Image 1 (cartoon, rainbow, N blue to C red):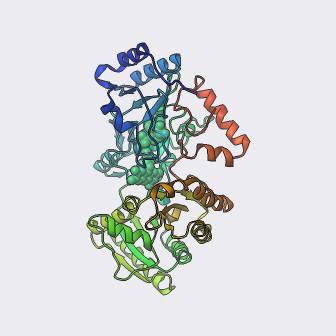
Image 2 (cartoon, protein in one colour):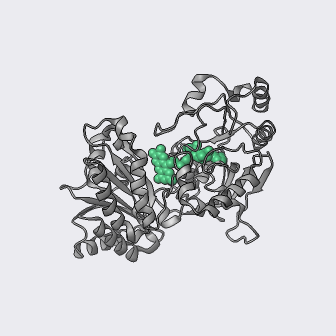
Image 3 (cartoon, rainbow, N blue to C red):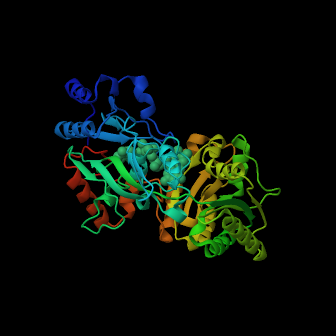
Length: 476
Ligand SMILES: Cc1cc2nc3c(=O)[nH]c(=O)nc-3n(C[C@H](O)[C@H](O)[C@H](O)COP(=O)(O)OP(=O)(O)OC[C@H]3O[C@@H](n4cnc5c(N)ncnc54)[C@H](O)[C@@H]3O)c2cc1C
């Protein structure tokens, strides 16, 4: 589906909506928008539109439906499944909300912030902080990803354990539908049981149902106490037992519990400037523990000491370091967040963003390591992630000296092995990055037929002309 060209007349009509300056057509202007972070997709597009108002977005969508022109929403272009990349060989028009990046309102009493869909995540965090509040969504890409993209991918990140993912952090939405109609659902209510939850349909839809132009986001009090520690352990079983201990002692004050393998720490120290190993001797596994408390700094300190003490006493923790300054806390998080980038200099990397029930993590990790290395001797596994959420980025670096292209050619074979085990443990093949182009066909092959059919019916109801980010998530 979808046209491979677009007539000059239609291009002129789109251009007239936003003005010449904001309708980009040159190869140089379009180039950065046709590729994505992992280099897996390279799309084509004749036109990039940068509307400045909701009304302009509406006019664009109306014209797109009238002319059957496919529209691909793109905000920060940091997505990891090719959802924001136009299709190759088609004439998809890219719609960027870059110019619609304002913080519209902050209400610290109601604990809400209203932002444009193009607001950069880091700017939203800063605006909340300026009012003594916290917007807890935090990702490695927060300097460039934008709220519309965060909502459309239902982004997770490092604080899901305590605050939830984007779905839990959003109260209301403003959406321009593929037909050009505007839905003003910018409600600020925590309680609103009035029929179908339309908001929840758009969150995680990856731009296939409409354009998110505005959102009401939830804020929280800024924590008064914050502690970060890094601990060395000998196994994933111990990491799970330690997580259980930490969450029992801290409850909702446990704001992060990240698992990392020795190989991940080794390559991060080797390949990322300024990162050093926080512990003196190597350990097979590591966890980063993050504790935030709302009453006082002392409570956080007391909690962290108790968690580590009991971890040592139970024989789970072999060594640990507590960050003694904000700079050290940031350095520990930087190490964890650089683990993806650290894999690049190691050659090809086959990625999986999976989740299983937390209690199944050790079984899954052991079985997957055995199956992957049996299929590919020498494969270097970098399985790390948000252990507290059951979410593991199960990445496989190529064997030393292997041919990168030949290794990457085995992407689907490795996916099949890892995802098979994930499904056997009742898990998900996409914990936080979404479906996009990367997992569209796989999703259709694993979900019950009735679920896929319901998704198609929803898609047709919202997008009768089939112009809204076609061939992403679900094919019609
Ligand atoms: C270094 C790095 C670290 C990351 N860490 C995490 C992480 O910890 N957790 C996590 O969940 N993700 C993570 N990601 C993935 C990515 O950053 C998130 O998915 C992010 O939410 C995407 O936002 P974006 O603005 O870049 O969206 P884009 O990449 O521009 O778009 C993503 C999807 O949303 C759609 N879309 C974009 N804007 C709109 C809109 N206004 N209306 C409707 N649809 C829209 C696009 O069509 C596409 O399908 C990471 C990425 C990188 C590069």
